[in-house]
Amino acid sequence: MDMNRWINYLLAGLLLCVFMSTPAFAGKTLVVAVNPNWPPMEMKDRKGKITGYEIDLIEAMGEAAGFHVKFIEVPWKTIFTGLEKGNYDAVLASVSITESRKDKYDFSEPYFTTEQLFVVPKAKREEPLREKSIAAFKLTTGAEALRLYQKVNIAFYTVEETDKAFKDLSKGLIDGVLCDSPMAVDYATYNNTYKDKFALTTCLLPDGVQIPKENYGIAVRKGNAEVLDLINQGLHAVKEKGIESEIRTKWIKPSELGTGPGLPDKDGLSLNAPAVP
Image (cartoon, one colour):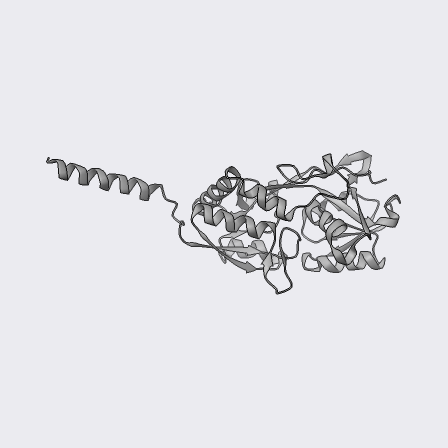
C-alpha cells in the first residue's frame, strides 16, 4: 500500500470516528414544552416573550451541545400527556424528579434543588396557620405535601392561576401560598406589585417533620436515550464552563432572610425561616 493511500484511509477513519461520536440530534432542533407561569424559572415579559432561568439555561445548553431549541407553551395539566404522545421531545417546567414520575419518564441529571415555602402576609407572619386557608397548585408536589398538613384548609389553584393566587393573598381572600422556593422568594421579595406585603416561612408537617428538598430535571419520553444524552451533554458543559452559575446569579436572587442560609447555594436555594406553628 502506497503512502498516499494509507494517509487517505487514516483520514477517512478519523472522520468516521468524529461522525460516530457526534450525538444523533446535534445540529437539529429539540422541541421543548414549557409552562411560563412559574417565575423566575419561566414567565412572560411585558412583550409576551417567554423568559427566565430555565429558558436561558437550555438555550445555553443547546449552544454548548450543538442543538437548537423550539419552545411550545403547554398547560400544566396536559404537559406530560403531550410528551407521552410524542408532541415534543422534552418537558422543561420546574419538574420535580419523583419516584412515580421516574416510572413513566426519563429525566436529565438534576439542574436545580428546591424546597417548599409558605408565602404569607408580612403582618401575619407570626400567626399560626392552623385552620387557615392555604393555596396549593393542582398536580404539583406542593399540593401533595399540603395534603399531609392536615390542619389547614386547602384552596386549590391551577398552575396557570399562579398570579391569581398571590392577588387573592394580597386581598386577604386566602392566608398563605405554598410553592417552590424560587417562586416564593420572587413573589415575597422582588415582585414590585407586592413589595413589602409578603413574608416567607418554612413548611413543617405535623410532628416537626420538614418536607424534603426536591431536584428539578428535564423530562423526556421513556427510553429516548438520544435526546437524554444530548441534554445531559449540554448540562455538563454549561456547569463546567460556569455558564449555569452566571444564569443562576441573573435570575435567582437572595431571599429577605439575609445572608448565609438565605443565599443561593450551588444546587439551588437553601432557606431557613421561622417554623410554621
